[in-house]
Length: 306
Image 1 (cartoon, helix red, strand yellow):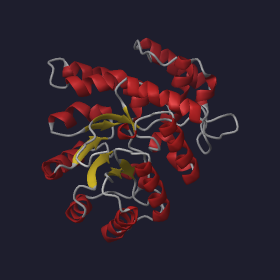
Image 2 (cartoon, one colour):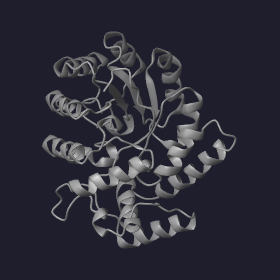
Image 3 (cartoon, helix red, strand yellow):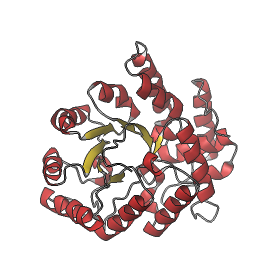
Image 4 (cartoon, rainbow, N blue to C red):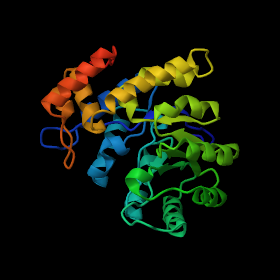
C-alpha cells in the first residue's frame, strides 16, 4: 500500500472464535470480519478483546493468512503485534506487512513493570529496525490499567523524532480524556493519528482533530459507531453519541469479552461463539439471560450478522 495512506474511522479488536477444543476457528473469524467490514468498521485483530495474549504467535500468523486468503483487504487491518519478546513482535509485524496490513497496533513489552522510557524506546527501535519495511505504520497502544506499562508523551515525542512516518499514531485506552486531549494537542499537528480506545470518546476525539476510535464495541454495535464517525459534523451527533453510550453501559455491567461473545452467539444463532479461552470463563446461563434481556430492553440488534 502507498506510504501516505492513513487509517481513520472506527476499528474493532475483533473477538477470536474458538472451536470446542479451544483451537482458533479461522472460518468464523473470516465471517465476522467480513460482517464488520460491511458495517464500515476496520479490523484490529489481536487486540485486547481478541484474547490476543491467549494466542501464540504461530496461531496469529495462521489466522492472518486465513484472512488474506479469504480476500479480506490488508489495508483495512491493524493487527495487534506487540508481545513481551521483541523477536515475537518482529515476526508478527513482518507477517502483517507481508499480507499488506495498513498498520499495526503495538503494545509495549508488558511483563516487567517500572521500566524506563529508555527501555521502551530501545524495544520499539529494535522492532522498527529489524522489520526494516518503509511501509510500516505503528500505532502505539496505551492501556496502562491492563499493561501497567504506560506510553508517555515524552516517549511518543522521542519515537516521532527518530521514526517520523513509521510511528503513525496511538490507541489511547486510558479512559482519561485529559491524556487523549494532550496527545491530540501535542502530536496531531505532526500527522500523528490519535484513536480513542472507547467510542464513548469518539465524538470528542473527532471534534479535536483525532482519527477515530478502536473499540471493543465495534464487535457488537459496528454500524451505529461507524455512522457517527461519518456524521460527526451533523446536528444530531451528540444524540448519536448518547445512544452509543447507552449500549456500552449495558455491556459494561458484565465481563466484557465473554459478554460480547455471548451476544454474538445469541444474535448469530451460533452457540459456539460463546467460547472463551482460559483463564477467561464463559458467561453463565443466568448472566447470558440477563445480558440479552438488558439488550432487548434498549432495542439492541446486530443486523446482518446471521
